[in-house]
Length: 162
Image 1 (cartoon, rainbow, N blue to C red):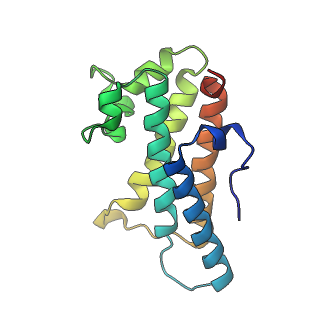
Image 2 (cartoon, helix red, strand yellow):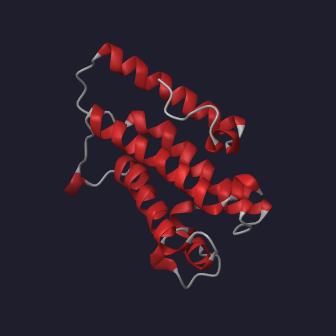
């Protein structure tokens, strides 16, 4: 099962590490699809794609010069903080930079943030008042949304052609 066309702009933009995460995730999806497990929670299927999404965003933000190279390679940058629209007043807020960037704007910034929450925060954090389990279909839909967001960002930022 290939969720990203290997001849696409997105695939050529991804680093080998990110391609590996996507490929491994596709294998897990295929194995699960064939096994027809009856698990109560398929959240783990989202993990590799969420990790690839985070890596994609870091690379995108570096290439757009929204973060510095030392931040990209460092351990301190947190996508959930720098992309969060509630922290617009912070110096390095990427949401604000995306909104003012030619070719992206508020719609893409909001979409990338919503995908971050959907594919990471709402899947991997435990909230006792809102314990969330994903069916196979729900996990698959989130994965497709994450990939769609990466495709949109790649297309709308024109970063691949730069």
